[in-house]
Length: 110
Length: 147
Image (cartoon, rainbow over all chains, first blue to last red; front, side, top):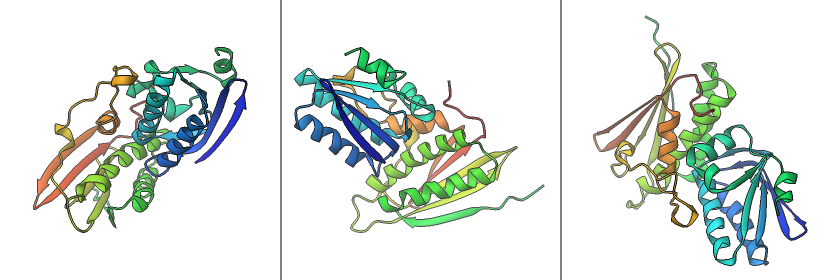
């Protein structure tokens, strides 16, 4: 797994490449909580290069969303592909989060 | 009748062996000609089952036990995956379905992994035999998750 973050206006775009599974999800969650710790409130997660996510990864996403809620933060998703899209759909995450086809589309909403 | 070869693997139930176990089953599925997308689904189901065993099966024991995995071809072109551990009894079929419609503050992740296994596999059997959990998963070659 590779995580890159980029500050764009008032938000941070986090791009995740590879796999978020039970092995990598602790690092994924730590990166996100560090960003929130630094004062980031709006996170656009670009998952265009993410090949795989398991329930361990969803757990990290949910924990992040719960941290953002009391500070009026936002968590948006962009670019979901194949298996990742399937997992978001069957878990119901596709209906509780805002999901956009591309990061540009997500950024336009902000 | 053609007898099919059984491939098997035994590893300690530790997180560092997760990928080795999943790769083993993925290789069996690939050997049977399953497509990339279906193999990715099978990887997901395997991760969910194995992480449960790694985190919970031996948590009340002083030492971690093993995970045994056996794969064989069954039926027309289905893959049968048998996963055995000698830890605490656990029947995933008896677990409660998660609420996949709850909003973020009420959302729980518990049970979601098992829900994925049930969505992905064509058959699931559980038996507690001689102090061991035996989970038998059957996967046909057609994908189950794609919309």
